[in-house]
Length: 137
Ligand SMILES: [Zn+2]
Ligand SMILES: [Zn+2]
Image 1 (cartoon, rainbow, N blue to C red):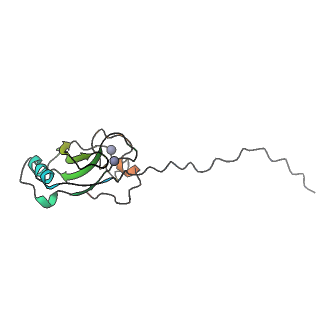
Image 2: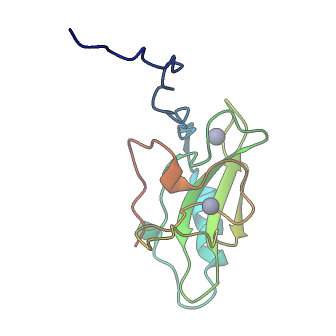
Image 3: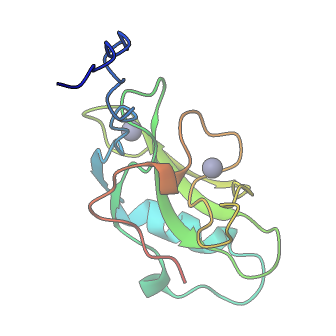
């Protein structure tokens, strides 16, 4: 006969603190030809190649963001040159292309860099569940 001490009345351990799923917006858009040509004109140095411009775009921002969707259209050569982006409103065609600085955030382990633009709202791209993870050269 063992005298078991009464177990202390611990509260239930908290469950694993799953961060809420953070998903990429992923809204799709097609870049019209006139904006492809405009994007190429934004390339600062050598002539851009039409194939360099991505035409099937999707918004890389965190879902449920405010404002326009943002899709990455073209990388620009050089350091700190930013990238060409296009923006559109839900259900509308992209209306312009703009050069936006790159988000300079990178994971602490150096494994990933953010694929969004500087000053973007929401999470950095590596924090988002992104089934189509954009590949950037
Ligand atoms: Zn979006
Ligand atoms: Zn970022």
